Image 1: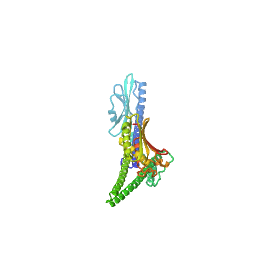
Image 2: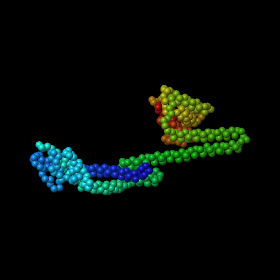
Image 3: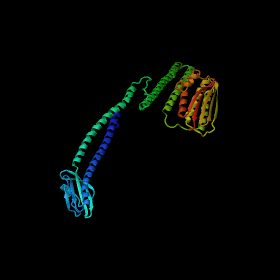
Image 4: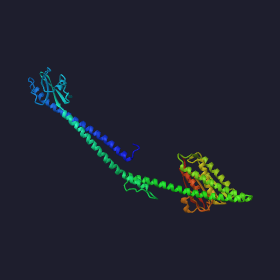
Length: 444
């Protein structure tokens, strides 16, 4: 049934249940009717023997009364002699020598059926054996007729059940079908209608609306990322092409050639950083499973190495990079990889040293706050507009040109993605003057 439509499966399931229930009900009803007819025939046969038993007990020395017309009776005296016999020949031949007090059924050669009961009547002369029979052929014929009626009635009821299930299933699935048709025509920001009733369909519509909204948001982010990435790639590519063209024109001038190659190298480096950040963000978006674990001592070492790299880059500028790394428990483990720590530090330091220009101070702090590692990078640059704080960690977001002349707008987005993948959080704030980014990583 897996390949069938839900409507067909529901109707077939209802039909199967109906068949089973009807079959059980009809079998039970037939059994009860047959039992009632049999018990009725047994009681009538026993009542036929009652008058003979009473007469024999009251008048033990006399012969039993004459059998009334239509009664099927056999009476044997204590010696085994039959003194009364109106039983059909075939039935009488099947009787035992003495009564047992029970009952039995018998079918003769002509197809008639009988119920036979027996009774023992004790007297001073000995025990008399009495048998009485009742023809139940008509009762069995009635049961056969009842069987036919039951079968026809069962078929009729089954047809009614199937038709009713078809209409009920169609009515129950009609809102689902309408929801499907509505979903096919959704446009723009339109969503499925959610009814006032808190039923299954309303909850399904709400769930589908949430899924549609998430898909639309993801599609918007993807389109925006593709558009921004194309724009970001186009600018350095165009600059690189122009620089190479100018270099080619001045290939006979060593000074111009050196300047052009250095500029082309910077553009190529920017392209490489942009591609690396995009790939890293994509990898984080697709990451599954538990995060890596890194000890506090390794994290401190990675931070110091990143600070050394940043100091090397600003060696020809009046930029000071201070550090305040104080981890009380170097053995504590956090849900972040060593490479991710390095990437976070490099991006935050790159943004900070770019913000301070040729003269300024950058401070890197790493302290423990309970079960949380707090990594904070501060600078004394011009800060950012307040409205930028709400979008600072979105991809390709930039503040004013004073802070991000060469940035791609992916550094903070990558920091936020790494923090979230590690189960942590990130925030940014203006220091007036200056700017700070704080990453919080919980212990694992």
